[in-house]
Length: 537
Image (cartoon, rainbow, N blue to C red; front, side, top):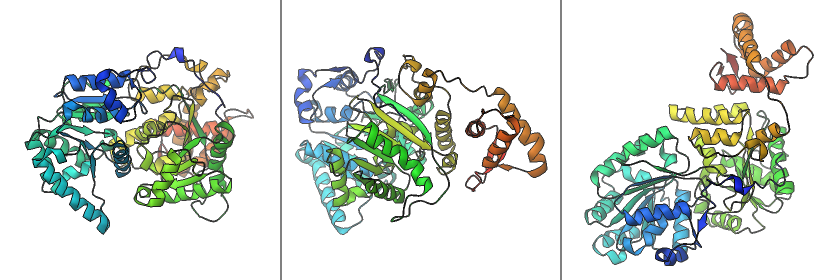
């Protein structure tokens, strides 16, 4: 389990920009106060200055989760220099739009939101009224909102009302900037991505701001081409030194999601570390637990309540109900009635809560390492120590989308991090080609792997073991019997090659098999079967 205290030596992180806050200068004082911001970090100040001084310049910003990227379009959008124009912000998820709309509205900033989900008569009437307001604003800038928040799929329909409003605003020079927030969420949506070049061709005079915390170098160049952006992206350090990364095994077999019954062994294997964090490591402090399915969120909330923990379930539909919005408000405001939120990936981004002390994944994020980067980034945004725990079973890897090569690569990258024998922080940052990792991992409590190295536990030499596994499957068992179940293979290898020694343990053999699958020396057939799938070379 993670230590109860693991405060890093702050002097070792001189290149970490997030904590380097400077008082805002006079030109931005009024706007910062309006948005409830006390000061700007160096990264924020530099980017905002560049936008103000070069208003026609495109901006592509990659910076750490919790570094305040939202402010990079909020503050320029309410400056006097953008008066009489609107900033159109494309945000992939309705839940994030809802949170951002409320934040701006509560700050007294004029804002409209648009998305395709208008399921009842009241919402349709509100949409019609909004259409009237925006059409009037095309001819009367006093009615023009400072921001229009929209889902990117609004771009898919060239004859839609939104397209007509957009055309009218752009033709009259009333759009200050296009902003693509959380752009990493769109990387596998080729239908939406195909609209980016069309948008730039139709409105080449409108500058663009692109924001993300998790875009690998290869996909960065793809986005730059799609948006016809000149210049290099501004890449800031992604390291979050206050976060402690940990992976623990869980049971993969057994029933779950049945409300009203006692916890199953599978559920207890996941509940135990969550309860440890909630009771022993961060008592009475806020936490966020991610589950893949809505039913699992409800189930875990029920089980935690039975253990005396104030927990509630949350999903993409929760913001559409009074009860759901109240649950989220209580959690954000540290109401003792809602201490832990059990959520789907509806809260993977756009959560303006600084004091989340732990984030737990009960399954792999559906978007692989990008989702992991984003969702763990909800923890410790105040700079204080926080824990990021991933509960993992090998079968999880086969329950997430693998429809495209991009999805497969993201999952493989996360599996590589999970099974790494080196620092998890270094593995995470290396995927994004971030070289700002400039301190000795073994001397800091940054992850469970480094804790093991610091304790003097020697790494396992696997070269000879790899040869034994491949030789046994290819030359022996597979020729006679065909593919072998993963769980059975683990037992066979342990019995056959250990020769009475305690190591490698069955768990080590299992991890070795998983590593060989990740590195594509082995492949798995029928991975969802009870025996753990069939392994073959």
